[in-house]
Amino acid sequence: MMKDPHSSEVEHVDVDEQDTKPIYENRVKAANAVKYTAYVMLFLGFLYFLVAFILPMFE
Image (tube, rainbow, N blue to C red):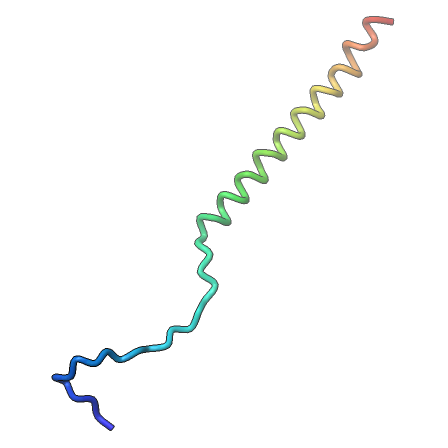
């Protein structure tokens, strides 16, 4: 059945829902993971410095 071109009825088209997570969110998550991993490594390095070099000076 053909649609009348002069009709004012709106044809509803079903759109499939897709996973629309933007790539930007994944990049932010990855950047935060790298940043906090670096913080943890710096903290552990500082603790190692204290234990290996500063603590023996007080003995």
